[in-house]
Amino acid sequence: QVQVVESGGASVQAGGSLRLSCTVRGSTFTITSMGWYRQAPEQQRELVAVLSRDGTTTYGDSVKGRFTISRANAERTGYLQMHSLKSDDTAVYLCNVRGYIGGIRYSEEWGQGTRVTVSS
Image 1: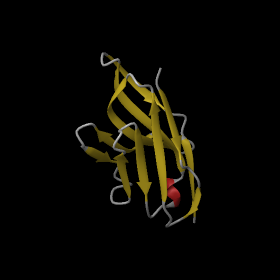
Image 2: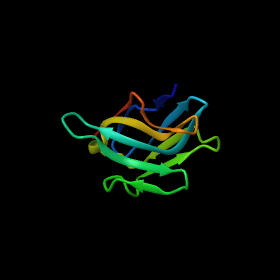
Image 3: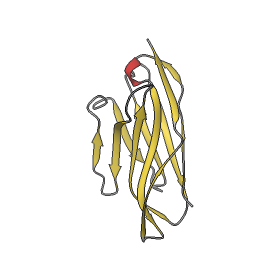
């Protein structure tokens, strides 16, 4: 069984910084990519950043230059470092991981989300 747990969400002032964490539990799950998405009220889920196993990163246009995605050496914990936060960044941030259970069965897993509120 795979469990994805996010943390680090908070309320901050515009211009501030936060770091979100995503931990993947489930030793048989081989991660091929880890990403962050966000969903604001009454808006569609939006790509924030994705980090592939080969190190390739993809960022949403609205966060380029402000957010950085990374993974710890153990690779089962990922981070989203956010700088210069704006009120438009207010959303629930969800971690998404893709990979293979037991090295065989493809799976995509989501966390429950962590809330970020940016006040101006």
